[in-house]
Image (tube, rainbow, N blue to C red; front, side):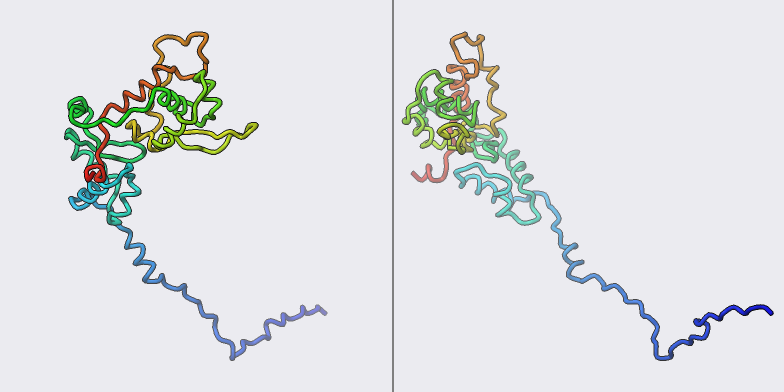
Length: 251
């Protein structure tokens, strides 16, 4: 007699009539506001006359170079500030007043080729003393640099009056302290230095190698910038008549 296999209890289970079929929960539809936000991304438009006039007024009224970020604060959201400044620069090319890149932004400057004739009637600002120009050149080429290091490169002591003159002209500023005995102050140039000498950034400064007419004499410090060439190179870069601000014109 063969043994019967045990029945599967599941075969006798009946569906509970009170149970309901599992419903598929539909994913929530995207919120209309989210779709609207994606569609509201501003489309950049070419510079128009109103944007150019606004940029022109801002550059003229600003005492410091105007950056694209500063200009974007007054332009419409769909206007590219860099493109507006580029169009304005093109408009002023070849004129008596040109839009030039200095100190990370742009400023109106008199055309360099007109400077010799303008000096006959325009008062040129007083130049820095030679010792101040030498000090400024050393700071520019070796920054950040301490006062003892400046004196070592120059081969002469540095008076507080010279530092004060450069600070008053806003050409240098303290940049922390050196981790050395006494923690001397480190000095470096400022954005005003770039604007004063018409430089976009420090990389546009003449190379120290290009300033050497003859090899350094043995008595001169090897690490030093030539005392004669570097200050003169900076002075030559400042030959153009500085731009006139609204405040200066009013005076």
